[in-house]
Image 1 (spheres, rainbow over the protein chains, first blue to last red):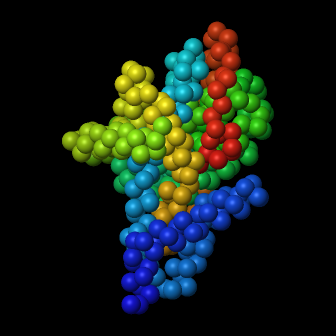
Image 2 (cartoon, rainbow over the protein chains, first blue to last red):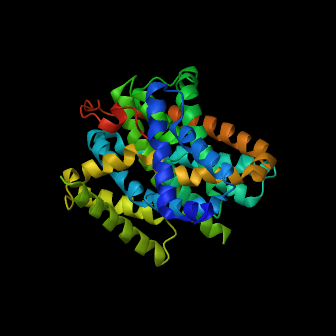
Image 3 (tube, each protein chain N blue to C red):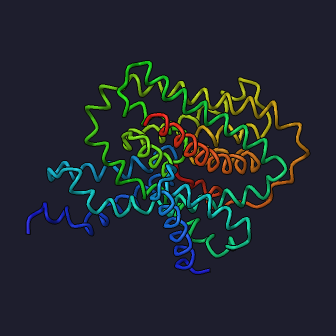
Length: 230
Length: 133
């Protein structure tokens, strides 16, 4: 049995992914600045390059793991519901604000890429960049974009927004905890939300709701966009 | 509650969403599943405690679920380097725009609402700082 057959075996890909993920999480716990996604992917890429295996060979098993993003998307309803109950009095206004943020995010992302001459699939890959990864991937597919570009942008939007979002908002005079939470959740999804916990429970809760709501709104708006493009 | 029950419920909504997507609704099946699941919880058809553990497990380890797709970046080198300027500019412009629009609108609209109920429940996943991107 040669090596290619081994890598192509779904169980090998799944085992390799798990074997890379566990130490990545441990590294992230020890050194918070290491993004677990990067730490998990690098060893896998190294193994594939070392054995001259194409991505397609690895992804035969990898796609089983990707498939689990479906139930994970559905699971986002749980934090959304839980925080929604606590935030009930301001939900209508919050929804409006998150909707406005989502529209601005999609238009400015796609618009900037388009103005700079990027081809249509690349433009479409930038459109869902503010929302949580599983939803962003689905929206990207609906719009015929390139999921890998979307993932890279989503992760960067999370990391950059978590570090530079709060100072930017302070500079703009945004002081209300709910406003800060809504902005971070809409722009920087789960990574931003996680970074708020240390500052304020209310900020994190609003952010958590806003992240799920932004995902839903962006999907609905992308469906409209897809109709126009047809 | 058992993980298996929670997973079955999530899968059922995912399947329902995929079915609705299949008959022509242009919204991703997972998002349709999310919306239906939210409605089912609001209507009291599904109790949050049936799914909570499974949902937290999936959300906590969501990073694992997009490792295989991200590994695909290894073959995206040519596209990425050719479009690097457009992609980077798009990210920075849009990130700033979303942040300011949402934050300023919130600052303007929200303080007029009645005083918020104190948010007392803590989300274990967020608490641990383990929420995936």
